[in-house]
Every structure is written in structure tokens, then in C-alpha cells.
Length: 105
Image 1 (spheres, rainbow, N blue to C red):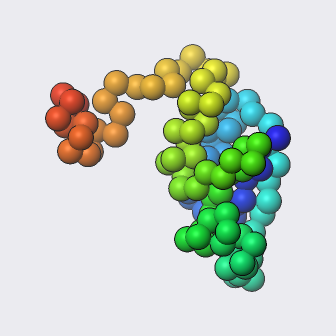
Image 2: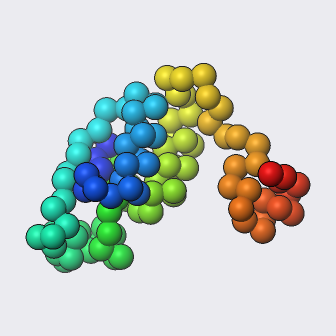
Image 3: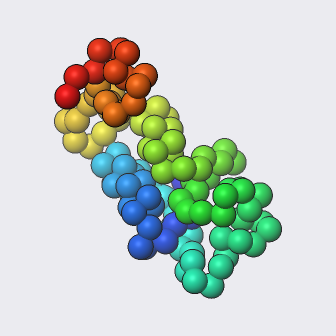
């Protein structure tokens, strides 16, 4: 089962929650009270050296950074409960790389 280290107030974690919900995936939440500092414990820093949330664990594979986690979930679980494309043309139009590929606003 997927495990997600998160905090309720983290907008980055909220983005991952939405992706998990859209895909209808079961996951176990490991809630961190960031004021108490569990994200700075050595065992967590081994998973996420930046000491931030979210962090996703999938069958022993550790994925950090919310956007990377979302892309990982799109690749690993391409099916969505909704009729939305998993890869949209022009995704991330703000970067120079997508501009070179012909992304227009």
C-alpha cells in the first residue's frame, strides 16, 4: 500500500492527495505535526534529506517533491476515475523547455 508522509496544512501534500483521490488509490497517511519537528528526525531525513513533506513510499521506493510524486503516480497508475487525460499537451507551459516544444498560452 502507498504511504504518504504529510501535514494537513501543506499545500504540496494537498496536491498529492488530489492526485491520489482522482486515481481512486488506497493509501496510508502518516501525519506529521511540523511544529513538533518529526521531519527533522534522522530516520525521516534518510527518506527525505530536505526534511519536508510530502514523501511517498511505494513498495520500498521513496519519491519526494510534490510535483515529482504526482508525475510518478501518473506514470505508475495511468488510469483515472475521471475522463481526464493523464498527460496534457503543453503541460507546464511556463518553462523554457516547453516553450521550445511549441507550447503556447
